[in-house]
Image (tube, rainbow, N blue to C red; front, side, top):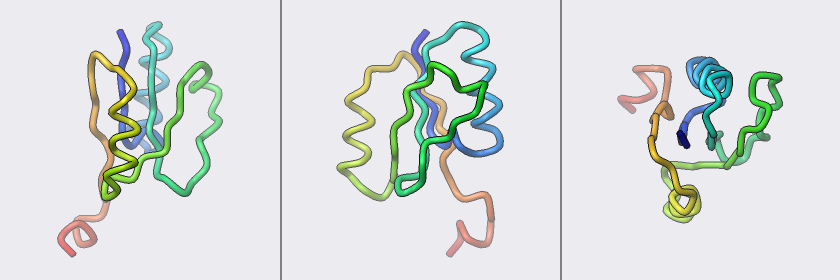
Amino acid sequence: MNVLVTGADGFVGRVLVGRLRGAGHAVTACFRAGAEAPAWPEADGVRWLPLELTDAASVAAVADHPSEHVVHLAGLSSGAAARR
């Protein structure tokens, strides 16, 4: 199975990416544009792509990578920041 994970560099994303890879799935993992791709041991073999959800070109570049499933974890972890 080929899975696209947005927000893969966050707490939940990191755990999910590791479990998907451990189960033998192909993973395309998105991290916040402007940051560096994470280099965790559990992320070996992961295709990392920068993603900024407010940038149409960034979203289009990620959408060009075929996936069977998408897990959307990108977002603000602070409720107050999200409301602003």
